[in-house]
Length: 117
Image (cartoon, rainbow, N blue to C red; front, side, top):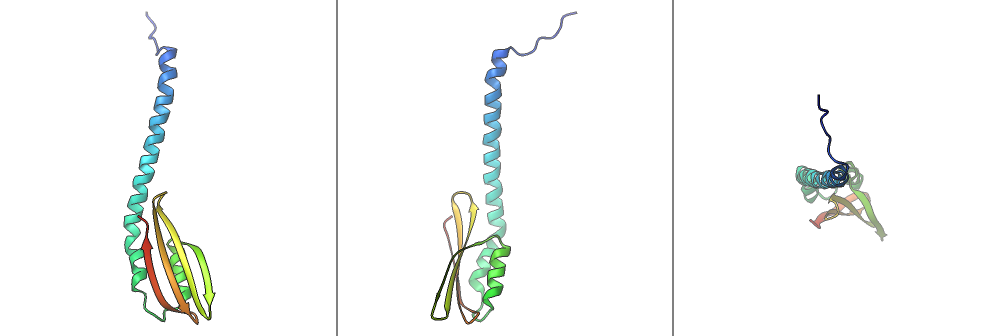
């Protein structure tokens, strides 16, 4: 009875890096697709920052931003007016969401958003 032959060593040496490269490409594409899905799922939460009323405690806005995965990018205080900017990278490395918070005496004066997506 004849023993089945496997792939020649040359084929294995060529196919191994090709399969690994295809797996890496698939992983990158799946990561990008997942990031876009997450961005679209959280877009309404991001847009809600534009509808925060003046006088809302600034600490509530800061907590909300952190809960949604935003990191504080900058903080400035000038004559009692505090200005903070938060950033979240939503589709690495392309999309970034910014929340700009201005507050006075612990209360929100204005919250604006901007994007780079």
